[in-house]
Image (cartoon, rainbow, N blue to C red):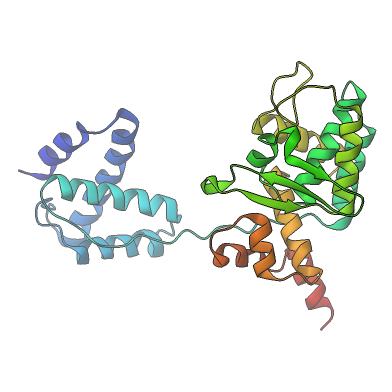
Length: 283
């Protein structure tokens, strides 16, 4: 079976969107192969060495992003598997862009923007302040915040906790609350309409979604004049960065954030752009 016939037969086994992307990838490989080796590729005889050379061409000569290279590699591996061969060539490792945490001034302005904006009823303003506190001062994921029930909050004079019942991996954990987070939650609970179930809900008393929280954070960032994209994950990252800078250790942070592996928590050790600039200026 020749190249074109094999490709067409293989693409017919895929969903339309995937087939469209893979067609472009396989056409690109086909053109590269003829230019490099002077003959048509045989899908039943593809080798890892040929594929590695192609990957090197994509990542080196053409400087394509890891996601693009890996998509084209996936198309080749799928075609080879369809033709009875197995390729083991590895793709490029995607380098995650570090999330830039908010500085103290930016975080303060974000809170002030929520306080000064008319969100409707007073309880809605305090709701939004409590949500910001759980993200930026307790490090919860946005999905964990919107899944909290009223009974998951424990507030005492000098301590406080929230119980995350279904964190990532469906793991349960208790997250300690700082004085500011306790204050924000207490202020919200004082005026919160008496409803059972979810801790946070909309003006029509439907449970908030992650998208709802994203919109609140984005609007607050816009009003605060923060000239970059701010998301709930930015606030979680801000918490982790501030925790480590204040002398906290990785093992404790791992428990608070609900990470399974310490290596995941260690990603927060990188210095942010502003701090790197400060360090260079001090030389």
